[in-house]
Image 1: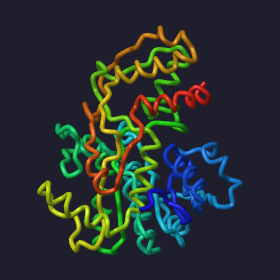
Image 2: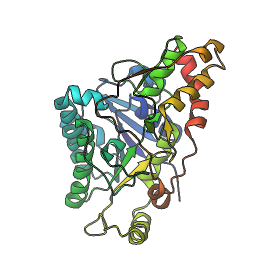
Image 3: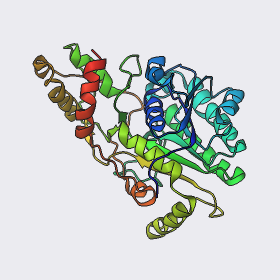
Image 4: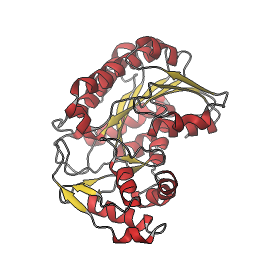
Length: 350
């Protein structure tokens, strides 16, 4: 069974962003025709600049909130890898209306366009924030808590719409609950920048990184190459294989099937490494890695501030479902991922 997408027409929404541009790059190397739909609100031209001369790459500067843009993007497509969203828990607390408009309104438009275009499968970026205040560790896909932010609500509502569209229109959907993705091309700038590139840039400047809280909060940090693997497996694992594996997986855990007619696919999977790292440990790993390039970084002291509203204390994924149903085998722990990413960070974030 193939484990990569080849010789297909693939749409990547948010393709100029961090995760999207990495997907575009790999898909092009695998001889696919790739259409990138992006409005460049959080994506960047420099992320896709190297692909613009590739005849197999098509860029549509458009918005998922515009249904015509969605229709144009999915025309003739085999797969949609939907990454476009307005991310960040804090941003959604400041501006819940725009987060809802993009993450739910845009999602539904894109999903409907894909259903009408009869794409083979719609794979979308879900979020670990969906687990909310659930205290269960590790996080398993069928047990969630109460949402702690508007962003978390939008991502869970997307899962509900995906299931509903699968039942109503027969479109196959798979949601990937990303756990704190990091790696090359991740933007360190702006008020809502992700923690790893933000810390890296701060350390490179010989400044003290600020940790929210006492540093005991922990995350299942996930390297970008694990995410790329998961997207491809989610897109191409055959329907009959998934259905057969799901029956056995659900039966042994007492889980009711998510498929009302056992013919449609609508599942969600955790995408992580399955290992927990607290923020104090994270900063120390970054200091150790960056000190290889600049010895002075080893002497930088860490600052602590108040906890951030909407943050969950701990996040650790069970990846058993992905392993069993998709054959997902993440190759990068946070340490291995940072070893590979640090050189990119050093060259690009200085």
